[in-house]
Image (cartoon, rainbow, N blue to C red; front, side, top):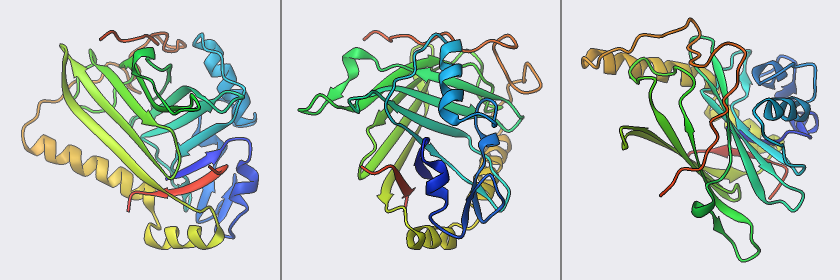
Length: 255
């Protein structure tokens, strides 16, 4: 995965002859792969979507953790936007979730105050939040589910953790742990040689795991709408709530 400053995508994708912005290449950042009108700058699209959800986008840098488009193919189960204020404090997160049925949903996440861990200079080093499910993703998970999220501040490494809850018990969790790599032509080339079709591997892995669950007899949950949206059409998630109780760009890998 890559961690990109959304205001410098053009410059960053020009770092290697194998990477491009909105143009076919081995690895491409395509604006159409993310929320909103691809003709507009990504920051403007984020601000508009945040406003529709009753959230004010902080004025500092925004880092995007995502997969690129490899040889023209892209599928991102989830992309994370880290939104900082002018003092470089992590204030807001966006989880941009896509399913395999053509649906997507944006979960705007505020930190749970009592869970915030801070460094001596008051920078948040751990960010936790909570949201209710608004998109059908897995055919094996019901709609009435809540999610909890925990993120570390991007640095030499980062962690993104998610748990799914039902009836006050967690039944699924996933953790992404990544280490920083320099964003340079050499490192990009090495990453592409090691993982030449990463997004193909992602979609194949998703279907392979689903097949194994189906083979084991795990019951299927019917999809309510063609694209899996659980909210009324045209609405965005308003359920942002508090649950009681480096460089501009890095290339990251879990190896």
